[in-house]
Image 1 (cartoon, rainbow, N blue to C red):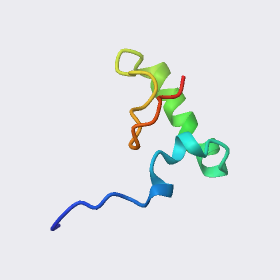
Image 2: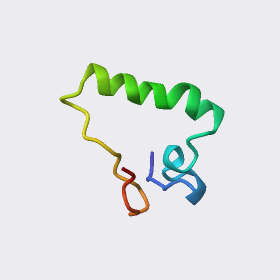
Image 3: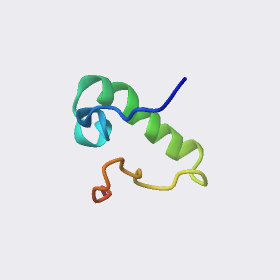
Image 4: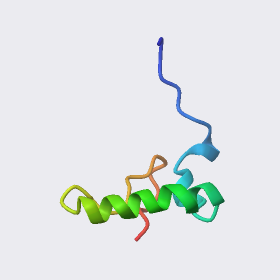
Length: 57
């Protein structure tokens, strides 16, 4: 690979901005919830956002 190119703006922080998209709601959010339950010592809370926005609570 010759370099890293950031994704287009609409891909940045996709889960945070689109929590009701069926794939996100059915697959990604449950994975995060399961991780929180299985490894609470590793879960750091709300994600760090790519676009320097305020972190969700």
